[in-house]
Length: 251
Image (cartoon, rainbow, N blue to C red; front, side):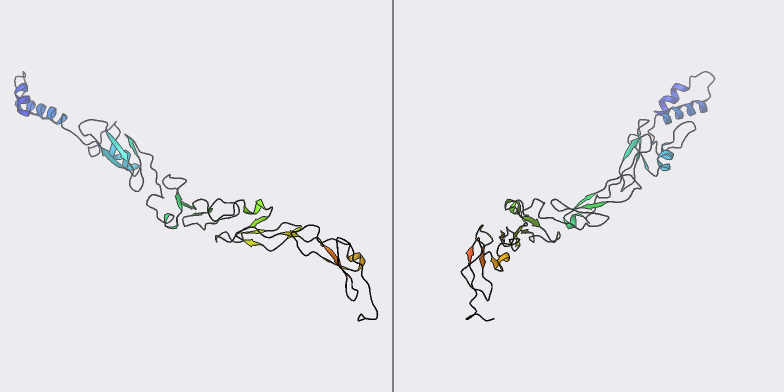
């Protein structure tokens, strides 16, 4: 190639052989590929290497045979690239982070801007809870959540209240009776609730008698019973006919 250019340049009038050789070398050099990221910077032009280095990024020339193909590329672990200028770099702190996944939780990085640090572990549904830069303490209210061990509508179907005493433990929810009904709470199921019809009932007390409700699940079965030393047959729903035999009673 250089020999060809040299032969062309030789016939030039007044041109010395050394000038023709320099011309040929100049033309040949201009056609050679050049890496814009490593080439010397010239005044009046954007210097690729300097532009990327100033942003703490790497300069990459993807096609050295064509001008204007250089990129600024973010340095790992950040990601991002931009043609002919500094890139906007992002850093996802959840990438490769196993702290959350080791506890069955989801890692979230709400701000991937480089320089803004902070990631979160978020509990997987139906559990709730979040924590920054560590695994979260997950909670589960089995009275309100939807899960295989949850109460669902078990308590509400019987007009009872659902109570979950410990959100960190499963299978401990219980149904409790709602006033005026009473009864023992039932873990994992509906309680046996009823109404004590003697509560607030002054019919028996007004006669000095005792009110007894033998079955809280039945209505209208309360009765008045005589109080010792008086005696008599209990009466359902009304005062009993009590007598006091002073000859036999212990006074």
